[in-house]
Each structure stands twice: as C-alpha cells, then as structure tokens.
Length: 105
Image 1 (cartoon, helix red, strand yellow):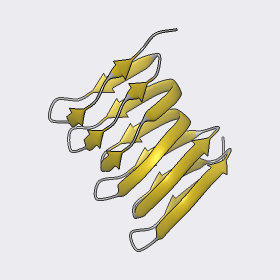
Image 2 (tube, one colour; image 1 turned 90 degrees about the horizontal axis):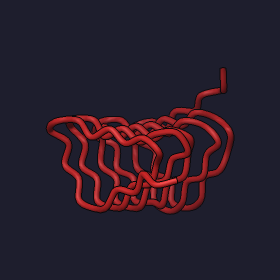
Image 3 (tube, helix red, strand yellow; image 1 turned 120 degrees about the vertical axis):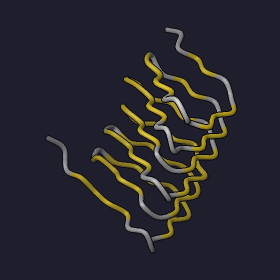
Image 4 (tube, helix red, strand yellow; image 1 turned 90 degrees about the vertical axis):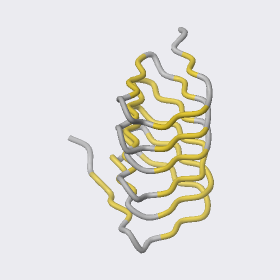
C-alpha cells in the first residue's frame, strides 16, 4: 500500500505538488497536482488546480480540470467546476458539477 500524506485544515499550498503517494487535502491548494496515486479532497477543502492522479475523490470544492487514469468520484457534498477526464466517472446525487465529462479511450 502506498504512503499517505494529509494536508491539514490550516495548511495552504500555492504551487505544484507531484509524487507517488496518496494525498488527502483538508486545507487549500492552488496550482497543479500530479500524482501516481489517489487524490482525495475532503469536505471543506478548497482546490484551485489542474489535477492528475490515478483516482480522484472529491467531497470539497475543486475549481480546475481533473484527469484520472482509473476513476473520478464526485461525492454528494462536493462542488466542482471544470472538465473531468477518466474511464469511469461517478457523480453522486447531490453533487454540484459544471463542466464536461470525457470518458473516451
């Protein structure tokens, strides 16, 4: 199992994040995120970034395009503005989403 990094509620990151660990955001991130693992935006977190990861799970707020090699999951309490690109996309009832979905090969 991959290592896990958690950015807490009071953490603000402005820049580029890259790595091969699971990343959980509880605070705020602006910039670009490229991960070889899972990316989780928890409820209350704010991400303004272009995101690339294997799996992206959003419960908070994301503004920016999201690409995942496996899947994107938008949870009921999330707010996402941007395009989604992944072979599998799950948009839960109650999720707020504005953008396009590309599930093509």
